[in-house]
Image (cartoon, rainbow, N blue to C red; front, side, top):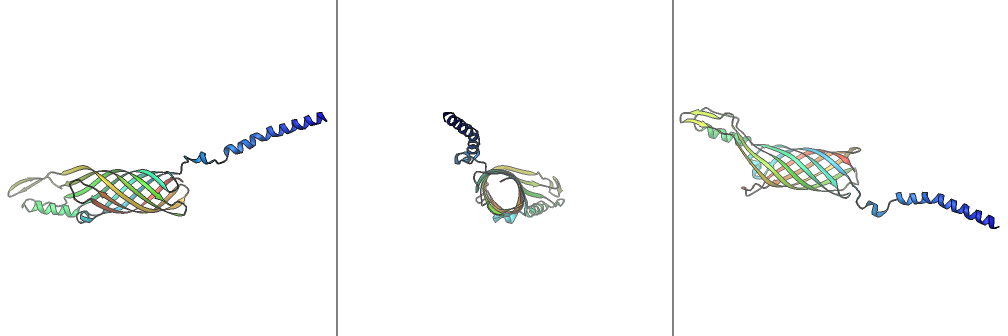
Length: 230
């Protein structure tokens, strides 16, 4: 009986030792609340382009232009992310060019036409993204703040105009300044395939030029493609 008892105990110990790694393995790989505290919720890279139109006082002087850029966003949770943007905008002013042509021609010299007046800028900003990801069509809102390097330019078709009063020298002008900017962009994402989303968006920018009492504003209507993991 004693020998049988010892053999039974030995068999039980072998079974326990053999089962322990499997049980322990289940416990290690199983979800635990603390193991997901700093989980990565997604990262995306996004090119975007828009048809841009200055509004307010700027809209009376400048024509429609382009607004393009690249954005990267890191989602801190399922619905909130932070990111960086770089972009380029260009707005021409045909009215300003015509007005300068008329001013130069009023001196009675050789007539000119085609003076080019425009504003272009490069901007760098940070944004906060709010989104609702748990559906096929995904809305989002980006709130951004940053700085722009703006160039207000006048480029004449010729630089020497001769007239009855003498010779008029025309010099191209490029006024460059760095200004703060605030922006908001709303839109939707549609999942086209795994890791890719596309959709339309609407943006609005406020650029605070120091010498102006009101900001330069522009409305953009465009589209984007978003590549990443979710």
